Structure formats: C-alpha cells, structure tokens
Image 1 (cartoon, rainbow, N blue to C red):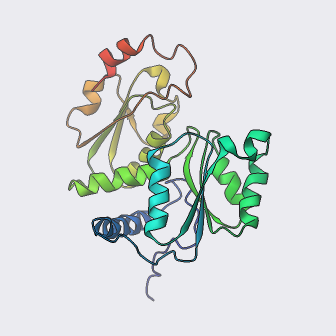
Image 2: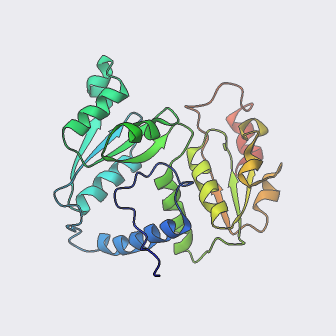
Image 3: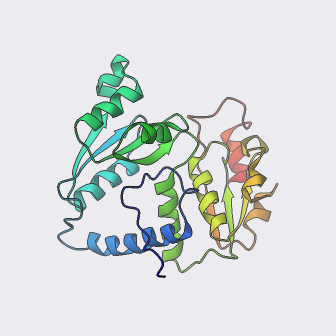
Amino acid sequence: MTKAAVSLSGRDILDLSSLSVEEYDLIMRTAAEMKKVMKRDIKKLPSLRGKSIVNLFYENSTRTRSSFELAGKYLGADVINLNTGTSSVKKGECLRDTILTMQSMACDAIVMRHPVEGAAKYAADIVAPVVINAGDGAHAHPTQGLLDMFTILEHGKKFKGMKMAIIGDILYSRVARSNIAAWTKLGADVHVAGPMTLIPHDIQALGVTVDKRVEDAIEGADVVDVLRIQLERQDMGMFPTPREYARIYGV
C-alpha cells in the first residue's frame, strides 16, 4: 500500500502546531522552487490563474502584506488589499460580516491579520474560502515561522538535535510561539531567555528550556532568534526602561 502524497490543497494555515513534519517539508521544497522563479526576469506562473485573494489586515503591515500581495500576483491570482482603516470596519462592521461579504464576492482565499488571538480560526470556521493567518494577536504567525525555517535550512542548518535560542519578548511574540511549535516538533533543543515578566509562566510545557541569562541561552547555539519588543501589546512596567533592557538582554 503506497503512502498518500502530502498536499495542502484547500487547507487553512492557522498555526504551525497543526502542520506535520511532512507538510513543513513540502512547503520548504515549494518555497525553494519559488525562489528560483523570483530571480527570473519574468516572475509569473499560472498556478493561481482565475483565483482571487483578499488581504484583510486589521493591523498595520509592510513586509507581510506586500509579500502576500506579490506572491499572489507572481502565481497569477487577482489580489485585493482591503484597508480596514477606510472600509466599513471604521463604521462598526464586525469581523463576521466583513468576511461573509468577502465570501459572497466569491474570493478563493482570505489572508488575515487581526489583533485578537483566535480571530483566524474564527474566520476559518465561518467561511468556505481558505484562510491564511498572517498574525493573530500574540498567538501565531505561521508564515513568518515558515520563513524563519526556510532561512535556517538555506544556511545549511538542520533542526534535529540542534540548540536554538529565542531571546527577548516571548510573552507577546506570535513569531516566538510559531517558531517554538515548529522547532520542537522538528527535534531541536529550544532555549528562551528574557525578562521574567516577558516569559510565559507555562512555557516549559511547550518543551523549551528557560535560561535566566542570555549568555546561557546563546552559548553553543546553532541559531539565535532575537525578538523585537512588542510595545503595542504590552502593559506598562514589563521592564524598567529600554536602555536597561538593551544593557541586559541586547544581543
């Protein structure tokens, strides 16, 4: 009996915990081929010709939104960027009504960034189009995690048995959560360090080691992931001052 081919066709991408190692591998191999296409003079493929994609961003974004827009266009899709600052959202339209409106216009996929954890899963449960999570609050940022994974592999690093350190604002970082989910699943030894006020109290349940000193976390590490401070999500008093933070936790 032959093993069924791995496919992500029609799948929502909401987090990295729900993807298998085989699915990671499929995405990495596809990304490597796509990178070759991006180096051509003509960067067009017909893979998504006739499909429509809506980029629905409730938070500001430069790199993520432009990356999704270009990717859709490179693959032949029609892409619409919905600016919630100038849409009916400003008049009080709720998320449910907005995504149902997008579905009624026969879009095939919705790429969504939202400040509330679980918003992407909520959308995926309501509408038929594929939903891709481009960041939901402090919960997950699966595509950034996949990009980090691709970068690590491009530098010749594997994951199984390697030491990987994540430094900084772990509590509010959706990227940290996505990377932890993927790296531990791939067999890496993941260490985290930062102010204890910015370390989730239950993070060891995710299979990581908490180091009190940055020096201990990065000693012998094959990969070091340095996070920015998520000031837009933090309460006051998480650390004394940015200068003090940089002195102790800067890399």
